[in-house]
Length: 293
Image 1 (cartoon, rainbow, N blue to C red):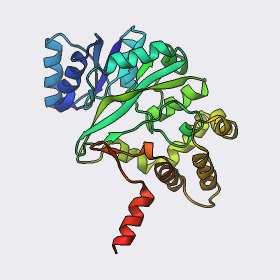
Image 2 (cartoon, rainbow, N blue to C red):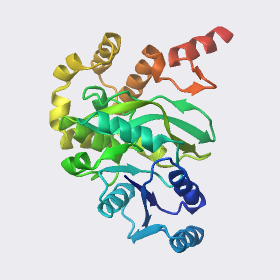
Image 3 (tube, one colour):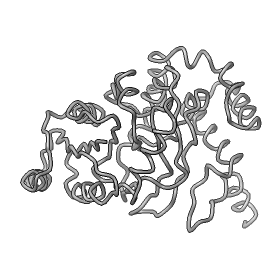
Image 4 (cartoon, one colour):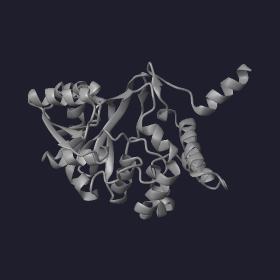
């Protein structure tokens, strides 16, 4: 299998990411893609990695999705894992992920839960499968997964240059009938920074992003009625989402927030875990605040 690590001025963390791959109990081809870094410290790290025998490919800056695809094109392995330069693979993750794909020929990717470290130290549960109905509302599948190369080829990989490029690809995969599988453990250690990064920027333009998704993947949004009936989501979640969809004159970003609140309220298994304990849902937190006054 291959691990592709895009890097744009993240040299402070890059060597840690590479080391987490080499510490796996499953051998993997590693390709670091320098996405036009300009930071001198990062360039020094890239030179050091290159001198130590790591494969480093440089390209003009084009965004993380394009950098991932550059790395995919540089490899031939049947399975590919895109690892962000500031993250780490959990010990033993690659073997578990590969075994899961071997057992599920119809799965485009395998993944587990993610453990945040740094600014916070929580475990974030992810979806157990790629649900064509749920994925049109919320994305709880990590971009850091082990992907089947044939599935990436089927949908063209990460083609969106801005706006949740990973969510866009999950929509494409679900539209083409691909499924996904969960390995039942943490597979990725996700670095939480003290200051907001890409995710915060994307939240600010959520409405434009969702409009673009509907243009790019109209069939899966049009099929919500059918896929809701086939979804593995509990009935209470499907009813709540239907009610939220009927609320008049609220912006898309607010509606998305309500979907997120609803699922974390109704499904205990979607809430962050701290020291082995799932955290209270949004309504529980609100009630506690009100009763303390």
